[in-house]
Length: 376
Ligand code: BGC
Ligand code: ZN
Image (spheres, rainbow, N blue to C red):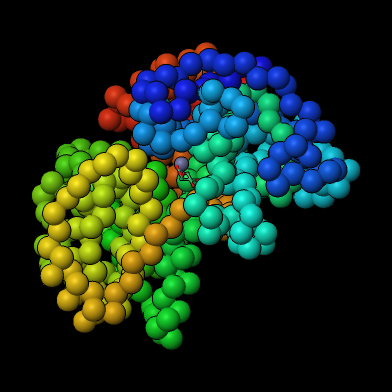
């Protein structure tokens, strides 16, 4: 089987590798795999994102033990081909996605919440210590396989980024239970990449007024990002024209900020904009070594006097996938046809891995790059 791989920590090493085809019996050798619970899947589509870009830049990611390469790809969409005797929730022919993290040893891993592992080492398909999905067939334990309705198959690889957005919002609400009463009215989403746009959707579906702050300028005619933001009934704001804290002075400080810029300086700057009792959620992975100067006295006093909260959020477990899939379905009803506009740049076949990486690195209009691996 062909697979798209990198040599971790070696810049620009993306290449084609070979893997033996998997079988249902392999499940017992997989992390978190149980006898009889295997699901064999044909890979249909795989999305790539900034994490894959950073892995190929040599900034992030590790190969599985015994390999000198790591198969890329953690945003999976596929079809079930065969299931073990103990699998009950999917059958051959079903469209499915898969979670990314696999369990370690902590208590959180033992109860199906490996997204919250307390161990420093984490296992993620296509990212850290486990091969990803950019290949032809994969096998996994049914625990990590999530069924997708046939009617959502045009949104395919968005299920995984949507699970991360769903978790980020859920964490904010969960953490804010400290307040007894919390009815957020206004939210800022910083960053208008896939996580920013999907977070905008989720918050709009909760009836919150959303301002999505993007790097790019406000253009006339409006850019695709702007059209998508406005298609969800949110406001598009350019960070070229205003700073986040100045903007907050203008429209009122937000109760919730979700940062998905991929820029740690921007993540810190957002701290100046939050309302009293508010929550700021950081979701970006920044593999570099940037250092930045922050107004620490100001932030410190504002955060203490305002009882503000910062939460980091990573990954999503199967419940976040389910919540995300439910919101994608509702989103299609509320804002018909808008979500699929995120899926801008298809690449045909695993052989075109160089084009996949080129789009990811160079093409500023590529909101979402994904590989069409096989036909249904
Ligand atoms: C993935 C997450 C993962 C995170 C950290 C993101 O790109 O979508 O599932 O947990 O990277 O590795
Ligand atoms: Zn990702």
